[in-house]
Amino acid sequence: MELINEIIKKKSAICAGIEPKLEKMPKEIVVSSLSLEDKIFVFLKEVLDGINTEVAAVNLSFAFFEKYGIEGVKAYKKVVEYCDKIGLFAICDVKKTGIGSEAKYYAEAYLKKKQYYDCDAITVIPYLDTDSCKEFYDVAVLNNKIIFQVIKTLNSGINEIQDLVFKGDKLYQIQAKKILEDSKYLKKYESIGIDIGTYNLDDIKYLRNLLNERIFLIRGYGSEHFKETIIKEAFNADGLGALINITNEIIYAYHSLGKGVKESAYIVAKNKKEEINKIRKAKIW
Image (tube, rainbow, N blue to C red; front, side, top):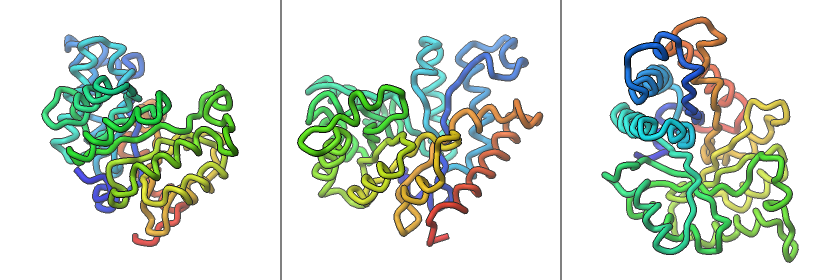
């Protein structure tokens, strides 16, 4: 599935973050006789059916599935298969890394077609060594998938590592230049994306200027610290190049709206899509 085609077709740059939490699901699901696997899937199926026309992708936080053990992992597989069935681009937010053959096997597990964890894209951590992402690149290209390299995050300890300065560049900038080199033979928006969480407008400006052919997964939208100008700078002049990740606000919208899970998720996803489209530099819609 081509992510850019989904963005254009749905006229949406929204990526719905999926974090299953049993305690936040409807009581009738929680107390039902369904297996834990099916409780998670039944709830998320309602969400997916509601948002499919309004979001370009979903970002499945693997930790929130894995926390429920084997049943949670089985629910993840069902969700990915259902996304494929309804034509919804599925990112597995697993933040993998590895060295040599270890990285290769992780990559094949999540990106090679017909494997158990197979999805459309994954997040990876590039800071293990300079070539820690090579195996992920290779498998992604062969299978027409995408890896999103996590190079900036919103955690409080960010300055301790990602903003360290070495020979005039911050560490995240050094990694960005490595991505530029590694992706020089790729087509625009193909195979390698960037996962970015920042409240600093200069970070986005730097990365967009350097990596104008890579797609960005932007985190932090909805926070009081997040500036709308970050969204504007994240997109290219063609109105493409970025996904805006929105997590619990969509999937648990029924708590605040007082409507059903499906209808509530649809309403919030549609509103967020329109909200983002108004403030970004869209020229093609």
